[in-house]
Image (cartoon, rainbow, N blue to C red):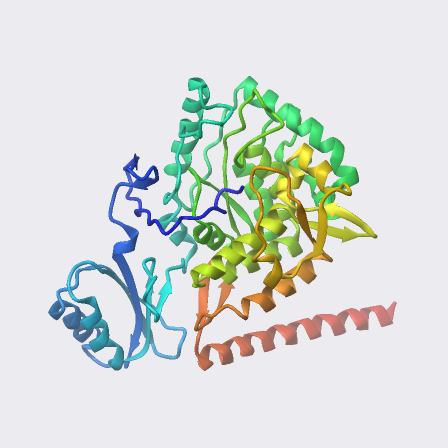
Length: 463
């Protein structure tokens, strides 16, 4: 199971504040000290440009006794000159009254909140800018040395303290910082070496062509060796140069919604710790072997990177039931996906490429194989503590990507989304003006491509 594909069971976690530490609550869930994310509601609106417009809006909040936690203005993407983002304390004052008065005088109005259940017009909160990932990176369901009783390291105090060390590093990380470099112990390196040696021996026969193409480059550029555990920052830099994907350390399990949202920005939340040395060929949770041997190589492939991002984009603002479907699609593709290449089945899922036993199982005649179809795959139940009985086959990453785009179009949300790589932000597409501007941009790009093509044709004719 990956760093974020887990269920929250309706529980909300608190938003972190700098300088705080996790606290174990009575429910057994780690919630961070600080204000609760569920108490914040975000209003995004545009008003007709005239003197005093914002002042009148703020007066409405004041009269409704709504406490404002944050206000910002930014250029609007919907023809109006500006739009405002207001973070409100939903538990103080009469926010419903403020919304009822403000909405009629706005040319654009949207309500976004984590506590969206039961509110038909409220969109589930999602990050708009890459730095917004800091808002949920520490809203985790488990932390540090808290291990289940059946975990191989449950009674090992040295291992638990080491896990705490890794979790603290991730907990204090913020977007834009370099990922701290780890001095792994000889025992940790030996565990990595055992896993590395056994898996690499299987890749040539069972791994997909894209994985086998990239793996030698990771050896050359990122220190992938039997006697060395690569550093997350080195791998992240390599991936950024290849496809724009980056790695971000995570302190524990994220909700499926939050984990998938990271993929929309081509950010993968990754662990840094390693499995317990007593069982090097088994881990009950994702570790650095799973992340760097299973996931990282494929994120360097442009088609796979685009496919992964499509799952993330589809999750933004999606209803809870569709989040579950998308997380299941992620499970059967990015985690346990197989593809057909030259008439043979090959593994591309990280859960296969980082598991000696499961990789051999998946390439045998024992499991059942079905074609990847998001609408069917997304409702398939699956075990998490045993080998998968069913695997879904992708004919190609491009084919899987197109199917995800078509599936995303069926998600009931009042907008579409687009990632802007220049600003590393999400553009919410819900107006004709935006579409016209995008079409103009696409037209300019097509003109550029045409010019380049005809130049090549001309050069070819002169040879």
